[in-house]
Amino acid sequence: GKVHGSDLPDTGKGIGAQRGQQAVDLPPQGPVVAGEAADHQTAGRGAGGTRDARFVQDGAGGTQQVGRMGRDHRQRRHAARAIQQGRCDFRAAWWALRILERGESAQGGLAQAGATIQRALALAQAGQDRYLASVSMNTLALLSQELDQPDEARRWLALGLEQAQGDLLAMTLNKVAEARVAVRRGDKRGQLNAYEEALEHAQRAEAPHTVAQIRVNLVDLHMHNGRPAVAMEEARLALPVLQSFRDLRLERTLRHNMGVSLLLLKQFDAARRI
Image 1: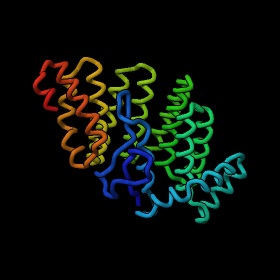
Image 2: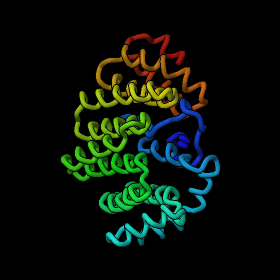
Image 3: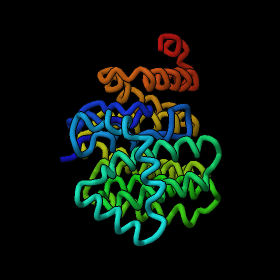
Image 4: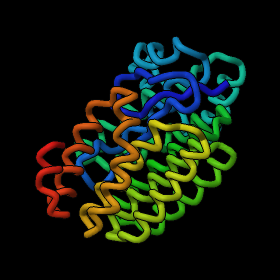
């Protein structure tokens, strides 16, 4: 079965195995850390509680193994057979490639990062894992937009959404990616629409932590676009959920934005109490 974890920092540790206890890769335009969600979502999928540690332990070897895969059709077919026969832990290799792509992106090697995530996508497809395939396509959309290839970004988002059909959390991540692409295009309306769709999917998935994370992004968006009252409405819904999950990092971010929103509303005493 599917086991989801949070996509907060890359520790390999999930928050829990029950639906409704997930967090996603959310981030945004503001101070919330971006690009971390799919990872913990995927870390726990598959083999159960021991999967996360195995991702970390197998990371280096998985990267080397996958670096030799996918260079031609014959190798991809060989990889698919190995996965089908249980001789290749493709999810561990996917995770290793994801970590490698993160490092390459952080160092500005966007084209190299794109090639790395293409290999991850080939693995996900060989393993017939639509969730990992969708996450890979979302990442390719973000990289394409960073490389000033908006048509490619749109194409990857559409393909990612197609792969995500039937999985509400995968659809949530796709819409978060769409919002992040919209940020880079300066499309504020598209950003808002995508986050609102992500919020709807997360609510239907009964994933309260994910819902709260999306609300944190919406708070930041509304605050920076002259809607501090709306920002406060979202913040008051998100805060108790973050507290219940002991998500101190996002709670600090949210309290900061609440303080700014209250100052914009000229509610100075309330802002001092945040």
